[in-house]
Amino acid sequence: MQARQVVRLAFLFVGLLGSGCSSQAALPRVKVEYSPSEDMACSSPPASPIKEEWKAELLSRQPEFVRLWQSEGPKLLAATEAISGRDFPLQDITARLTLCNAPSESFPGTDRVTINMRYALRSFTPEPVSLRYKVDTLFHELLHIFLSRHPIEASSGPMGCAPYSLRLSACWRYT
Image (cartoon, rainbow, N blue to C red):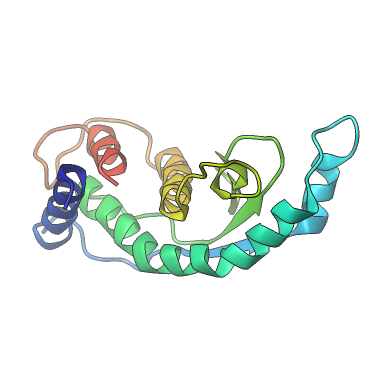
């Protein structure tokens, strides 16, 4: 087991089991979807085209991404709450997977985030990143929504008097 994984597991264990500062609230539901028709708008000339083999590969790998998110996502969201002492905004969130030539991003104040999936595809690059990396990207984008609802300030919680933004940064860093 890599040192990073050990630190991550220890961090999650302490955050989830050691926190008495926050009752466990319901977590937001994240719906993962890919819409080739939505990607058409960003691939029309003069924009960067999206190849059919990218779409086919993404559609074939989407169930795997969803399973990974369903396995890891709730743990990451719960750890965020435990570490920060704050509840995640309870809302349904759509995670839109995209092949557009645009970065992953969140849209605080809305119910959606966009995750660029190009670099997770063998049909796009010979050395794709793992789907787990893209799950972490989804979590990162959700943290933007979390922080938009809980502006940065000093607070106490499971990690003492450190500002919760630092604790969240540590949570994201060790995922």
